[in-house]
Image (cartoon, rainbow, N blue to C red; front, side, top):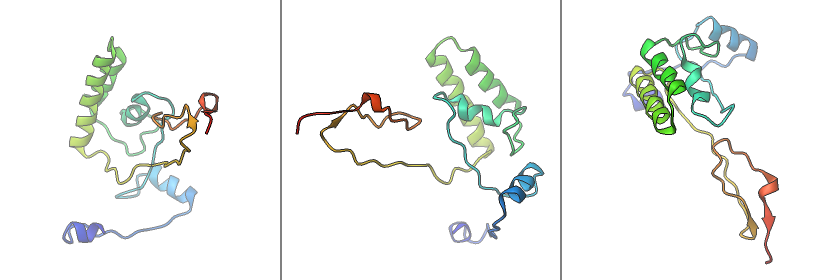
Length: 139
């Protein structure tokens, strides 16, 4: 698909590996492109932003940009939600301009919920469903 979509500029050979081998190769940076994913640990943008800090142990891509680090640090020091959002936006812009990551998919969890089940919003960013909030109306 990449070859076709880039008019032959990118030619990729897929290589399946056992998990331990894959992890060793990622840690040792023995790859050109590696597929990886990250799910939110907590409901805050830094759950993704901290991943790319120069000194983060999770930063297996070894991405380093002092301006990015400053933008994330500014999010910690911001006194309000607006300031944090501005700092996060700056950090995201830096990542995008550096092509630090190439998102190829997003997880989606579709749900079918009967119309008589109330209390379900489907808007939790971590996809948590709190059963204590659900109730059935007469139908």
